[in-house]
Image (cartoon, one colour):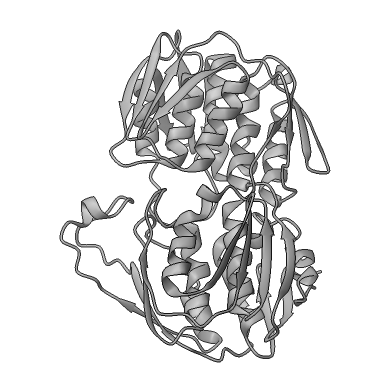
Length: 439
């Protein structure tokens, strides 16, 4: 079987869909579970490739872990090794978060450069600086490709992120659970997935609370799970199927997603005149209505999520006029543009005037380097079939949606990227009336 989908498009997708658990919560709570002194049970864990890769990595560290249906049971007391396997760590970016449980258990740890999608300057310098502020001694060994870290005593101090870091905030929280006194994380990221992590830790006895962009952790001695923890639905999957319903001129109802997870996306759709209906209790209906052009820029939560912008681009190909998307989080998020052009999309790169790019962008902006951070999409367009190649997770979902919108047959290659983050993608699309198969 090849790593590709065959898709026949140009039919409205309709129906109801139950969302899977959030990838970006599941990965983090699996690692956080290693901080506990008792077995941990986690519900609504999606069966996706990134989760399986992390579970395989944890097993190599000696951890006893079981994934049955959508429940994971993990026994942190079986953790035996403090060096993370290079090959397995290269598959997922969250491997760097293992510093927290490994340092807590062994006082020393070795973790290679993190993997995952290569979206540009995702510097971990801010994360390393944060660890050092807490008392961690950490160096990079260029000969082995490993970060080597150690800690004496309990974490302590406070840290202010120069720019909010989602992964950095999560690692600092996990590192501080057993701190000496109080740790304050300032200019912390505000993504809702972080709040789910905090809830999971607090239910086990941690003392963590948020005050806007500051997170305060009071040290505790142990964590013990008192009841299973159920993670929230995936807000990127929610937007994926919302766009699929609207762009195919269909009608899709999704459930259940916490409303505040997707409000920034809902605001954009409503401003553009799309068909949106809030049905209550985390249930939303998305259906076709003629839309107006829109201009968006990505930003950390509560702004427009960077993972949503490729999906929105497909939707904008079906809108009359010119819409623009400006990417502020990553420097290499437009790999899908050339692929959309293969289907007949009119997408061009534009250069907006930015007065202070060092402050405006959230990646490590380098003066004198050529950046392509903004696109204009002109529609409406009758997309046609084509042969597409996926280069990263969200670009993959984008191209699959574009193929489902397009007239005729398309081949989408490299779909392992999609399966890293979407549970039962083919089955769910088929349940909505889409014609898709893997070969």
